[in-house]
Length: 323
Ligand code: AVJ
Image 1 (cartoon, rainbow, N blue to C red):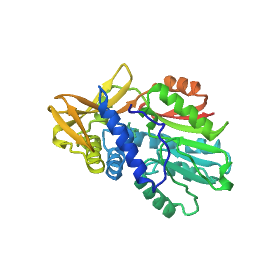
Image 2: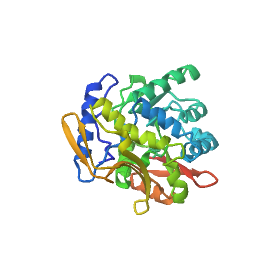
Image 3: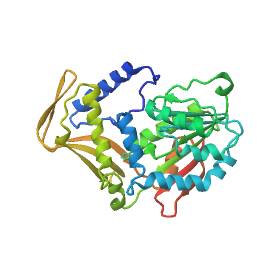
């Protein structure tokens, strides 16, 4: 299962529990007849840095396109935001796009970035402290459903959720609807959610975005094996696996896989795994939507669409929803 969002929340100091969860997830994923690894584990310090590099690749249009859309409509988003709101961001990473909203919305009470990477959160916190010294920031290390512990004066504020980057695309459609619904329940009735959603387009544009000429995405995918080697005492031979990105038209998604180049045996902790020549390990899904497709999904999840915006080439979309 590459789409598990039900993992328990954790704190920054809770490394051993995290490692146990990583171990259990990896062993379960590689024990299935169709091997998979969860994309959640991409984001160790090196993986987060590689993802930052991906966002600047010429082939990877989502980040720069979403940034343009947000810049163009930040004032509209701000105008709909109640004074004294909390901005809660899911999968905040470096929080760079967030600065567009943070500067547009004058009256925010605080910013709550949630991310699985404590390294990325810490970097974002330091940068924001410098650039926006008056902003209160409460980072949460964890997955999207992590418990948010806030000081009393902030706990009951109206909430604006921010879920950019088409991170929602990692989930299957039904899991995405479930997650959006749960987020709505957590953020409260009449809460808003601004979601970035990548759009279906020509596979000749989509595939290179996930298989770039410089090989940064390949390094990002293969880094998962490096992380397993380091943290779970694995012995993957990185030269014997190859990155692959394929367009699955039936599911309307890009899939990333790691392809075993020969029959081989890999040890992880006290376990042994067999890989056949040409066998695939599925590591990520990145679902692509049409505008109406996503609006229908948001409605099923309990939201009304206030607005939706695209760039002039219809590459990417941003949806402003209310629960
Ligand atoms: C962070 C999940 C939005 O699916 O485009 C980028 C991750 N994987 N290149 C995406 C990713 C390979 C990215 N998301």
